[in-house]
Every structure is written in C-alpha cells, then in structure tokens.
Image 1 (spheres, rainbow, N blue to C red):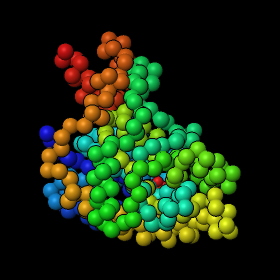
Image 2 (cartoon, helix red, strand yellow):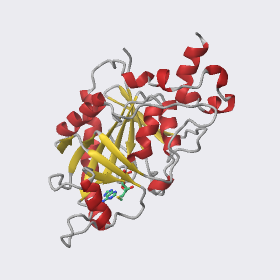
Image 3 (cartoon, protein in one colour):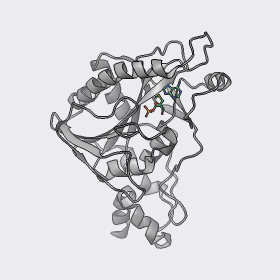
Image 4 (tube, rainbow, N blue to C red):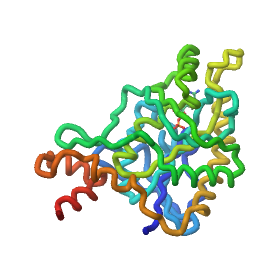
Length: 293
Ligand SMILES: CSC[C@H]1O[C@H](OP(=O)(O)O)[C@H](O)[C@@H]1O
Ligand SMILES: Nc1ncnc2[nH]cnc12
C-alpha cells in the first residue's frame, strides 16, 4: 500500500485550481519537450495533487499542438500515481444535456496528427487498451462529481477528433451511428500515453453543447461553449476538492501500475540505450527490476 499523488489535467476553461493548499507552480522539462505549462503542485486534505492546464494557462495550444507525451511524462516525473483528466465535450445524445459530467469508459480515436507512443524503434511495447480507463479512479471521480452536485452520467464512449474545426453535420451523425456518446479533441492520445506510463487514467467530460447532429437551427457555437465552460469549471473545482475527501487513506496497487512487465517486449540486451535513457521516467521501474534480475 502507498500514498496517492493525483495528477489533474485541466481542460478548456480549467486553467488552475483554488483547491490546493501551499500550491506552487513548478517548471518541469522532459525528454519529449516542454509540457503545456508549469505544474501546480500542492495538497488537499494532506493528499498531494499535481495540476496541469492542458492548453496552457493562457489557452495558447490548440488540440493538435498539445504535447501529450511531455504532459504525461511530466506528471509521472512529478510522482503522480493516477491521472484524472477533465475535458470540455460535445454531446451526441439527447439525454446528455449541457452541464452533465460524463465519466467516459471507452474511446474511438479519430486523431491523426499527433505523437501517440513513447516507444518506437529500439524499444517496443504493446500495452493493452481494451479497457482504457481505470475503473477505480473513474468510480472515485464519479463519486466526487456527485458530491459536487453535478448531474453525472457513468460510462460513455468518447470520440476524439483532430480538430481544431468542429465536426460537419454528416460526421456528427456518423459518430452517433458508431455508438459514440460524446465528442472532444484531446483525450487521445493522452489516455494511450497514460497507459504506457503505467498511470491509471480516468476522464470526466463536461458537456458544453450538443454538437451539430440535431440540425434544429441550434448548432454548436463557440460563444455558447464558452459560457457553459465557465459554469462547468466552477463545479469542476468542487469535484477536485471532493475527490481528495473521497480517496481511501492508502492506495492499493492497480494492475495498470505494472502493465509494462508484460507489454515491453524488447529484451534488455536488444534495447536501444538512447531511447531507454529518454524513457527514464516512463519505464525506469521496469528497467531497474529487470536489470536486477
Ligand atoms: C473550446 S471547446 C473545444 C476544445 O475544448 C476541449 O478541450 P479539452 O478537452 O482540453 O477541455 C475540446 O476537446 C477542444 O479542444
Ligand atoms: N462539439 C464539440 N466537438 C468537439 N470538441 C468539443 N469540445 C466541446 N464541444 C465540442
């Protein structure tokens, strides 16, 4: 058993959090480049939290330019044990009304212009993604959203699009036929990279709009999104504080903590030392375990 350190990735509208005590912004560099911003590190009820605004504090990074590898590496390097992502999303279902907090459990990845793995020539790993989120953290996040008095929907398929433009009506309707419930631009490859970094990941999407599938003359418009974002962000601040209150005192291990034990298939002798050095935060645990064998 060990302590929790919770990484929070704040999406559009969520650029800092007031919930942290003794909070400090700390600059972190990574072998993958700079994360979106400095990390805001502090405690809530004694639990360490590390907050990172996904688009930067001044929202200067569009979705395709968010360096998700640097963000996940920085959170791992800062000692995070688990990562909760908070995101603005469009709804593809009538019942998922604006303001609903949706705890995603599946993803469809339609992104195409992003680095999606820490691994590559010289070090090969194939992590399982059948269940892309951590059920324990998702439950805790859903409980925290309830406690923050949000309308909560548990279990949803999030379609990640490249953006930055919003969908055409035909795309929006196609995604509904595919079974997607909500749409956004950032959860992929973030969730994949968290898994490669052995970080249990959960995503709470906060509905800002109905996208454009309804075709009722009330299509998504950025002004509406921004106004709903502000309401959602106020509830998200409460969610973060409630998450700290609801965490079990000690953190039991998760199977995700050790996923590279079987997923990393290049044997130690065949690994490229330069890439292994770059992977120090991501698979330092496996390396020291295997080299000690
Ligand atoms: C301004 S709405 C579009 C923008 O918001 C979402 O980002 P995030 O997931 O970081 O909240 C969405 O995916 C788009 O990037
Ligand atoms: N309709 C939408 N499409 C993609 N990303 C979004 N983020 C918020 N609303 C969205």
